[in-house]
Length: 191
Image 1 (tube, rainbow, N blue to C red):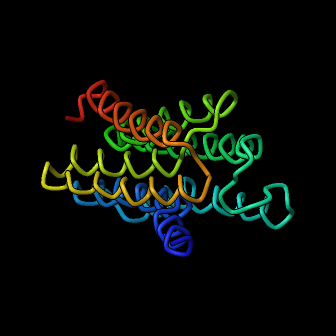
Image 2: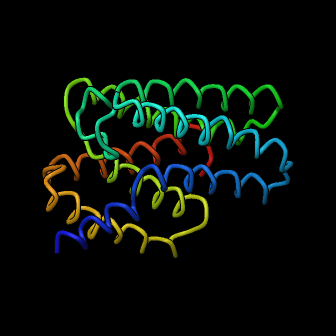
């Protein structure tokens, strides 16, 4: 069962899913007429550069494991990612892509929330990213994607059974992400 938990944890890894979530935002923007060049630059700023920074920290052992299990090791990764993401928001604003900037701002505010919590408590980013993706799909595409919330069950089981999180840490991560996404999209009038 432990290998199944590891497999689930890797498949639904934030390092995989954050670029997917950003990719969904890019897909939404493309469907609404935005140019590919802008969207590729945005993905470079928001996903590729932060991932390369994480890989650097991982290779130099400043982050001791892929899951960034030590809470304090998460701070430079989150901080750098938030700064890079702010650059993506700025790019969207400067090029007049207000709706994309608003969606990215919701992601950024969610990142700020998890970053702030990290100073005091270890909350599950696996839960947060999966719940954020489900909420994004439900809000942007429709309730037919409500089934994506069901993915939280095997992911939660995997993270808890591997000892990476408690039930409370996982549940709080999922609830905060979903609620923050919903409130953010309401705040910006995106839904």
